[in-house]
Length: 126
Image 1: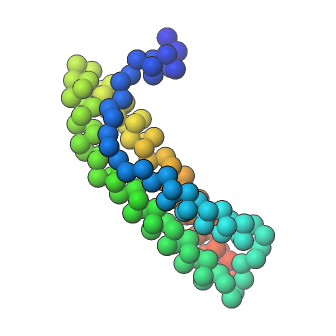
Image 2 (image 1 turned 120 degrees about the vertical axis):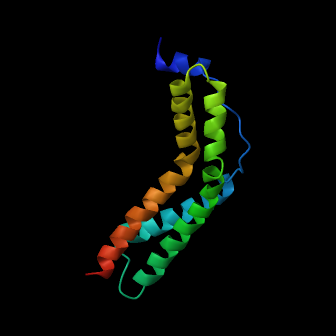
Image 3 (image 1 turned 135 degrees about the vertical axis):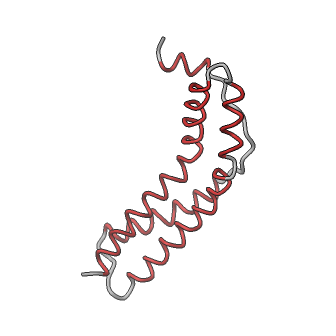
């Protein structure tokens, strides 16, 4: 049985979480604009602190948005373990996969921010 076919049989628990699509899109625009400035070599001693702070604020913003996912972790895990009580390891695995997929849009942007902070910090220390 292929992985895709197995996934069709797995019943994911629906959980109400805020839709941060618009907010993540705004954060993504800041990330893209800052990435453009870094890639074009337009960071200099006059503006590097501004861009560093801009990325930090964006990272904090994304982190606050992702709090809604962190807040449901324990409850969601218990629900999966209970739902798959005859197969607790499967319940934990499905929970882990589902929880990771919920975090993915936030994590992608956070990783980009951390990478840019490292790059800007390298420019500041030059």
